[in-house]
Image (cartoon, rainbow, N blue to C red; front, top):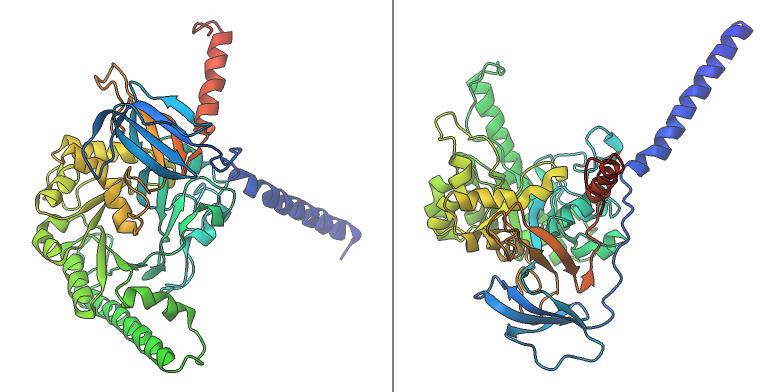
Length: 460
């Protein structure tokens, strides 16, 4: 090899190393928020003259709400009683107070941008991985968290994806320095992606029906076998505690014992019926995720007291024979049939901020407004197992709440969070006042200043 060839190789290697170093440096910055998490609540706070919407009880047109050390200590109609010393008083006249909204099923925090693979932690390798906990991979510095908070969404059920058993959802507050400080519940339930139950005829699929049905049978048998193995392994370890712990099977224990739900991703009638039969036979607590055709088996869901997480309303119908508004009216039809409904955005994490608009579409198509609010507050809290501490405004619960202001343009002065013109003016998580700024608000101010300097809009 000549000296020129050696020098050429050296230059290429140096360039490659430089590119790799740049990628290592830049990748974390892509997902680095400049927001500073709020400090703990230092003194009591009283909200007065506010329209209170507890969700768990009737609204109060003009009332007060007190909280201290992150917990609600009093609320009621009219003027408050004697306030504690050094109490901060916020006059919320013309404003509304709601519980913080809950993104019941999302991947926010697990991915920053699909264009950069190193920021995508939505899935692990393998088909059966119940030991995976979503919160271990959530990025507390994600720029998407402040954007989501600005829409009034203060809590998230973060669901890992992929495989047959994707892992365990985590329940997180959307403000904190570390994964531990985000944690409300590190792991609640297990996610099972139910296989299809019928063969598919499509131009892009050339696999014969017999092959498809054989694969479907194999997939279902693998699920049965894994649950059988988990049950047997746990029974053996209970009989002999000295046996080594299998983390996969140990993660299944709260679900197999009926203490936590099995979240089954299922949309078609066949999938939902199969999941219902499976969970009933094994004595499992079931929650359906997706449920595009859940209304067709609503009687079975109601009888088994199985809630449904509707994965967004801004989508196309599942079947060509469905009406264009089938996704819009699904929550209303499920509610009318007596099925408990929570609503998720079902979209990319960057669009999680649109969750209230998905609910507003359901309300505009028949879902009672109060049920729409419950679908992203108290019902969502019940699905995630945190209803004892979150999801409504009640004495003893977390002071995780939003103060909203409406607009005369919409005719809603007090600030319905389902209205697009409503502004989230103030937010508290566990009594801590949260910075509602975000990359969006910074860019908004930047370009408003540009147009002020150009004389296109009036200066302040």
